[in-house]
Image (cartoon, rainbow, N blue to C red; front, side):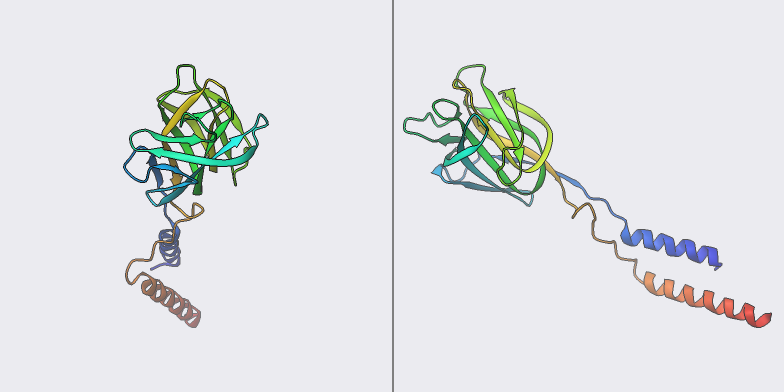
Length: 216
C-alpha cells in the first residue's frame, strides 16, 4: 500500500471513530393522564428520559414571583392553581396573577401547549422563558386548544394569566431536545481488527522506507 493510500485509510478510520449525529427527541407531557391528583406543592413527570417538575406561584405586574402556591392536577382536565380561598381551580388572573412553572432537567425547546377548561372567551396567557425561575421574557397570546410557541429554548418556562377575566387549565406541553451530550456523541469504535490493521500498515510503510534508503 502506498503512503498516500495509507494516509487515506488512516483518515477514513479517524472519521469513523469520531463521526456521529445526535437525534432530536420530541415528547409530550400529558397532565390529564391517570396518576396522582389533587393539590400539592409540586408534581413530577418524566417522558423519554427527561424529567419535569411543575410548581405554582403568584406574580406581580413587574413579572416577579413573590409567593409559592399550590398546584392542582385532575385526571382528564390537567393542571390548575389554588392561590386563595374560593379560587376556581384554574390558572387565572382574578384577584392574584397565577403562573405555572415548568422546570426541566435539561435544556429543551418548547414547541406547544394544550389548554382546556376555559373561563368564557378571549382568554390570554403569559409565556415566560428563563432559567432558575427568573421571568426574563414574557409575551402575550390568546389561549386556544393548542398554541404553537415558536421553539423558545431554556430549562424553565412559565405559563401564567394576568388578565382578570382569563382562566384556563394546562392539559399538556410538548418539547424537544438533542439527545447528544453537548452535540458531541460518543466516538464510534473502530471495526474489529481495525486498530491492528492500521498498526500493521504503518509498520509496512516504515519497512519500505528503510529498504529504499538501503537501496540507495
